[in-house]
View 1: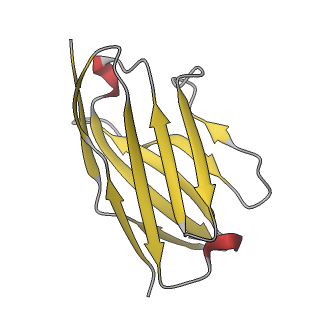
View 2: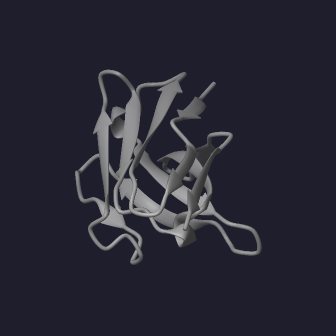
View 3: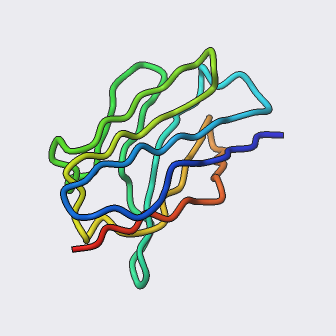
Length: 115
């Protein structure tokens, strides 16, 4: 059974940095798309960063070079380094694992950026 556990959320001032980590278990994730989405109150869940097995990374338009996603297949982890954080980056960040038509989500980790 696939499980995803996020860590690293918290509160930071605008301009600061946070690193989110997601540890996956229950499968060999080297063939999975791994990524991060976020959701803030009143808004739909949106793509932050997506890292497919072929390495063609996608970022949400709002990232604009501030975030970097990385993955370690041997450790089954995916990491999101977030710099130059803005108050509008506040939300719950979810780790995602996807293969074929199946998608799994982590429980989410709260990121709060104060102005």
